[in-house]
Length: 419
Ligand SMILES: *Cc1c(COP(=O)(O)O)cnc(C)c1O
Image 1 (cartoon, rainbow, N blue to C red):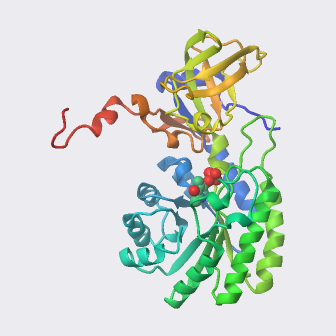
Image 2: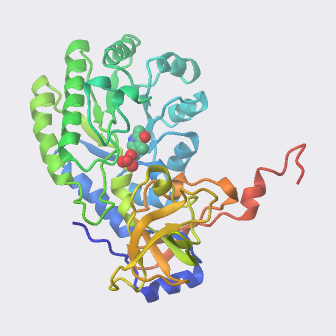
Image 3: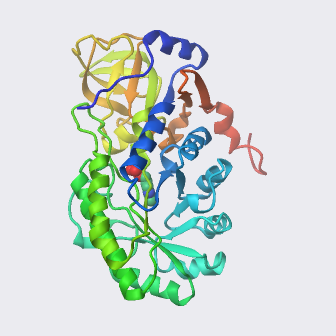
């Protein structure tokens, strides 16, 4: 069980809304810091542990500043994400560049920042060398292919576009070694939103074994092993949260038996968690605009899929409460919708809520990762603002809502523009 609790009382929330109209995402600084510390503590045994926050989960300078203050790095996969990290003062080996199908401009930027570059394919060795040069340190992303089966994967590894095959891994590190590269990392990310510690440990075991084999067969040092992101969060109140402490303990054992036994005693352990760090720290706050009763009951919000895609895109569950009606018995069965002309623009389907009134403030939980950042402008929908609830209880805006001017910006200012 995990408790779904909004950090503001109804009156505090109304005071925030007076200044910042709904819809908006609001993030809790305290929770983000707590999750960073919890992860670091669980891996305190590692010679060096670093959490590279997955910027795509919540790409906002204020958030990256908090991550940096907690000793974290940034996992970037695009040019704007690299620039966000740079502007937050996160640099050099505190940036992990884990991209795929990468344009050369992005490699050049990563190279100039001296980021840890993680190649997604063997063919990118020549591409990187041609456009950026050979870095001092190189990392490759491993895809275990059909040797791994199960669910909670990003997709069956054999069907996933990411990473190198096992044979290619050995070939790629050999090529780099022969070119004179002296520092190496190993990367793998096969899981997404997994609540199973055991599955995580199994994957890590496999990656540790591969790193040990690369080390002994090619006589190369392995400076770090990056296990990627993918730690899940309990979106449903009845789900149990991921036991990161157990993960830490079990990986410590595997580290000793698989890595230390072949002499890899200084290899650092990296993670690229996004969801685990900021997911539960975010809430989408929205106002009920309309109620509609046809073949089903519909509760229409002022937010839409542009602000939170996960329910529409993955049928993902996000918990919903009504500010001030926390103690009221749920008895109204409804679909909670946004205003997009797409029938999958629903935050919830057949959800039991307390009786809903127009003007109610609905709180949608766990929106702090892959929420606002996944949004889009389809149907001319403008994405909402982002607020930060500071540890001292104050609320600041960290991203304003999009305006109609933003929407029209790409239609103006070029020859041939009709506007
Ligand atoms: C998306 C992604 C992450 C973060 O995943 P979470 O589910 O948010 O932990 C980390 N690394 C890479 C390479 C990714 O693509």
